[in-house]
Image (cartoon, rainbow, N blue to C red):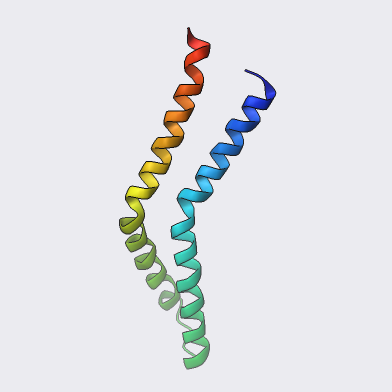
Length: 89
């Protein structure tokens, strides 16, 4: 296995991780921003008010995008197994 192949695999792994985590991260950022704006407007400084909505939103996003995440990870794993097969035989 050459250095270029290893770099390609690492790049693909990083890209797959970013794509799989993006929906939850984006929702967490948006919900956090909305809660922060709400807290600044109402001057309520309760930590659980910032934490609980993010957890609920991320869990709902995980339920909604779970199939996409699983298919993305499955595609990556399939590509990795297919790239190893020539070295086995």
